[in-house]
Image 1 (cartoon, rainbow, N blue to C red):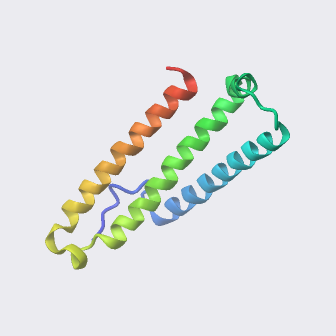
Image 2: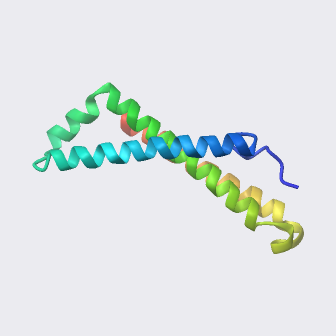
Length: 122
């Protein structure tokens, strides 16, 4: 039996909804950046810096970052719970799965903090 302690939305419906909303946010961010780059073929560092100095762009980037982390966590949680089972690893499946989730959680937290430091200059 898989417990709901390590999933993000606490239920399949919420996890599904978080993944769909995060996918929309990531797609909007990528589309915006591609359009911005196409419309600014002579882009230099000062223009790029000016874009990211604006509050709305920092917030948009933060939403994209949090969407990536949430989307990845739910996806990897699903993969781990589907493929690291007692049938594949015997009695050590829970230990291996929890260890993998802790490692992935530390990586996700590290990248989130690092991204916030980059975006907000903390």
